[in-house]
Image (cartoon, rainbow, N blue to C red; front, side, top):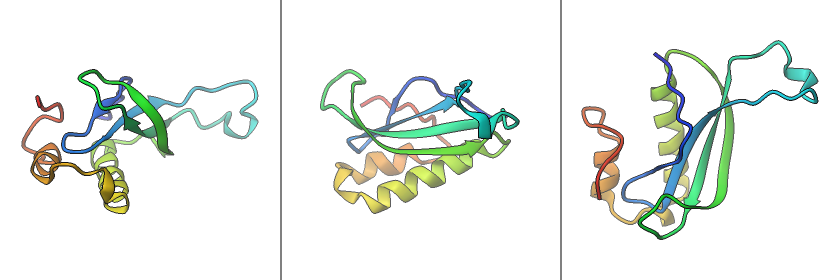
Length: 108
């Protein structure tokens, strides 16, 4: 089943977070009127805080809403993290975050 996350989630072991939003259509989006199954992946720089606070948006990508969203999102997150290794603080926590046998939300 596809999933939609509407709140930012911290990526354990990094200074990053991500969220998945349904694409919001506007009357100005003439080129996308027929495509109502789009989601947007946003990757954020998070503030160093105990709360989920966004510093700035680093990456945005529109994707089709399919049954493989969780796998595709994980691939995009991994690719972004590999290209921006300076954001990684703890590789063990990061590895545990992407472990498919565990929940995405980890307590730090």
